[in-house]
Length: 199
Image 1 (cartoon, rainbow, N blue to C red):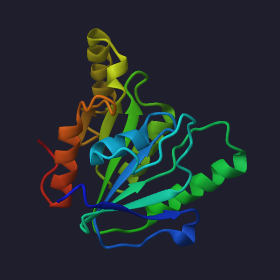
Image 2: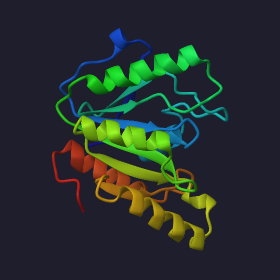
Image 3: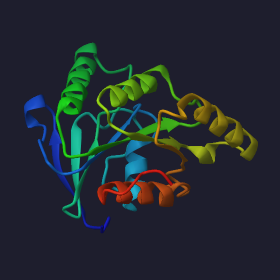
Image 4: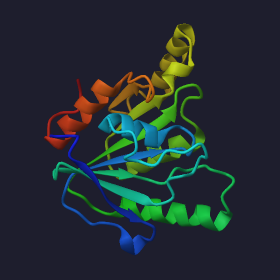
C-alpha cells in the first residue's frame, strides 16, 4: 500500500454527508489538544494533509482520506474543547455518534492521547464507544518528546496499566520526532491487508 498516494476526499459537516463504504476504515479520534492531526500527518509522512493549527478544535467535521484506493482514513472532530458553544459541541457529538453507528467492512480505531496526562475521562468514553461497537483500537500516546526518560517510563507504565487488555496495542509516539511511526504504519498496513494486528 502506497501511503504517498493519499488524497483528501470529503469533509462531512452533517449526518447526511457521511460516506457509507464497504472499504476498510481507520478512525482517528482524540481530544482537541492532543495533536491528532499531527499524528495523522506523521503517519502519512506529509506535512499538511490534515489541518494543524495553534488553536485546538481545528477539525470540526468528519474528514475522509483515500489511501491508495484501498483504505479510508477518517479524522473525527476533536472532543472536549470547552470554548466551543454548547450547540456546536452537541452537533459534534451527534456527528461522531452517527458516524460510529454506520457499518463498514472493517474498522480500526486509533485513539490519540497525550502521554503526559494519560487517558482522560472523555478518552475512556471513546474507549467504551469502540468496545460497544466491537471496533478494535490502538492507542497512540503522543507527545513523548515532552517528557524526560524517567517521566516517559513512568507515564508509559501508567497508560499500560489503564488500557492493557482493552487496546490492541499501545504505541508511544512523537509526531515531531517520528518516534513510534514505524509501528503505527505496520499496524495500519497489516489491518488494511487483513492480517492480525498483534505483534
